[in-house]
Image (tube, rainbow, N blue to C red; front, side):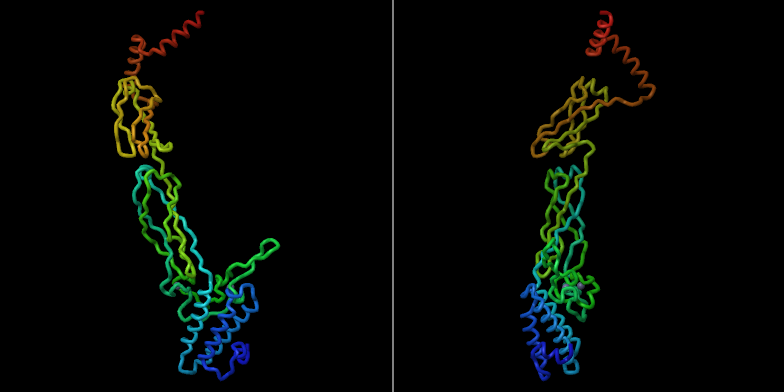
Length: 342
Ligand SMILES: [Zn+2]
Ligand SMILES: [Zn+2]
């Protein structure tokens, strides 16, 4: 645009004061702002031309008492300020953070401290994303409207311009601290309360700790996903707990006291003499919320034994035969014998 066109766009003559230029520009920017005139490309064009004319004519005042930098930054804040004010408040996205807890901790519940990246406004650019003293230009992608058409089948819809994020203007230089995002990520320690009886995959919501909102929008929420590590012995079935306890053969025959883990600490179970594999003892109230814990006995048969044990076992087998202590085995052998001679 020529200088004459600049004056024409603002509807002023070359003798206008800087104050008059500013007032005229502000009025045009307000009237033609894309958010006030959705889908009006003529208004967007007038908005862009007004900004161009204002910048050009304001910089002409650099030789006067007002320094150029001040004028420029005034244009910039004017453009950005207005665009921001008119831009729609945008809620920050929700974020997800995964952490794991032990089975016993998940059953009992308690506080954990996690270190998560949290977004906060960039202090260097006050959240604008613009480098200090940077000039700006009207976005070429959307011609200052902040919107762009998006094809959806036979129709097209308007969405926020991806180049300028809906602001209509782009800063020439981005803030070096936040790389133009207006916000930075910082590792933050958060204390989370894990409720007792938490299941694997439970999501705990921490309000407002997700991504930062834009243009006055609320922050998103942070979802902490809890992975519950398995316990090698205790398993959960609803509110009841099950534990399988290996017991030596000799203890199963004689009976005895065996240690049993519970979520409240270690306890003991007294097993009767002659206990079989698969026998279940019940610990009342030792499960979740007053439910029971079941203790399943599993007799361990050794894979290999030292010679001394082997010798003792042979002697034991002989005694077992002569004393006829295995009632079911003896009955079975007698039946096999009877069938073969029938
Ligand atoms: Zn744009
Ligand atoms: Zn910044």
